[in-house]
Image (tube, rainbow, N blue to C red; front, top):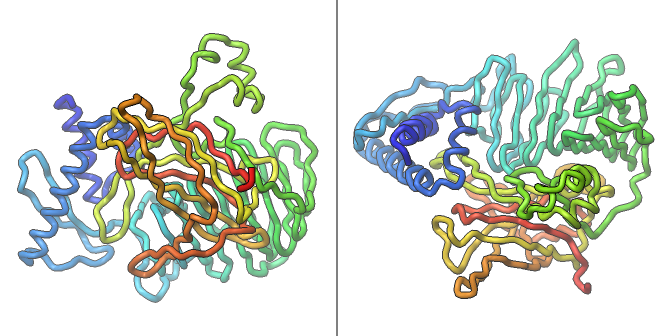
Length: 465
C-alpha cells in the first residue's frame, strides 16, 4: 500500500478500536479492505497489537475497569506508527435493571452485529440484552443479525438480517418505520384513536393489536397478518386494504397491479435465486460480455427474470464487514446475503426432505486460500403463523483441484444438516431442531478470510429429484 493509504487506514483503525468511528468512515474502511491483501494483513496485525496492549495494561493494573458511560482514557506506545485509544462506550444508553424516564424500548434478545442511534447522533454498537433505548433507529448490519425490542406498552418487534427500523412516538401513537429488511411485530391493544402506525417502502399501515410480519425491499413491501387486522394503504395511488388473519398484501412502488388482500394458502417448497432481484448484500457483477456490448439485451434483462437467467451470467461476491461483539476485538468477516421469501412470488416453506444446491467459485489467488476451504452457510426463518423463528447454520468444506486449475464448486446441503443457533448469556450453542414448516426469509454465506467466495446461483430442490 502507498504511504498515504497507510495513514488513512491507520487513522480508521485507531477510531475503530476507540469506538469513535462513524458510519461513513466504517464504510470507507471496508472499501479499503475489500480485495486489498496488504490492507487486510495490516488490519489483522493492528487488531492483534491492540488486544496485546490491552492485556498488558490490564495485567499491570495501570487502570481500573471502566463502566458504561464513563469518559475515555488513552494509552500510547508499543508502535510509533500507532496511536491506540482504549475506552468505554460513548453513547446514550441506560444500563442496569431500571429504565430512565426517556426510555422507549428495551432489548430482550439479539445476536450478530446490531447498531443503535438516536436523533442527536449518538451511536452504539456493543448493545446487550436488557439495555434500555430512547427513540431512535436500530439496525441489523449483517446477514445473520437479529434483535428483539419490547416497547414501553409491552408490544414487541423483531428485525432480522440486514434491516433498519426507526421507532418513535408521534401524538400518542407509536410509529415503526421499516426502511428495509424483515420485521415481525406482536402489537398489544392500542387506543382506537391512536393506532400503531407502520411505515415501509410504498405502504403505510394502522394497527390496533395484532401479530404480523413485514418484508420491505426498495421496490415493494409485503404485509402478512397472522392474528387480528391490519389496515394497509398503498402510497402510489391511495388504495386501502384491510388485511385479516391468514392473509397478506403486497404494495409495490411503481405499478398499477391489483392491490388486494390474498388468502395465505399457497406456499412454494422449491426456489431458485435470480440476480440481481434477490441480492441483499454483496458485490454483484456480470462475468460475461453479452449485456455489456449489446444494449438491447441489457435493457431487457433489467425487466425480464427469464432473460436475466438465460443471458446474463451474474455473480455475487462476498463483501467485507467489521463485526463488533461486546468483550471481544472487532473481527473482519466477508459475506453475501440472498433474499428468498422477500422476492419470491410465493412465500417459501422449508420441506424436511429438501436440500440446497449451490454453485459458486473460490478465488485461489486470494490471500489465505489453500486447497481446502471453509465457509458458513446460514438462513433466517419465520414461523408461518407467527414471528421470528431463528437462525440455522452449517459449515461447509469445498475441495478444489489447483492442479486442474479448477476453482468452481457445486454442493448440495440437506436441510437436516442445518443446526439452530441458540443465543446464551455467555456463549451461543447449536442445537438440532427441525426447521421443517418454517418460512425461509434469506440465505447467507460468511467467511472469516477473504477467499474471494462468489455465488453463481442457489436453489432449493426436493431430495428425490
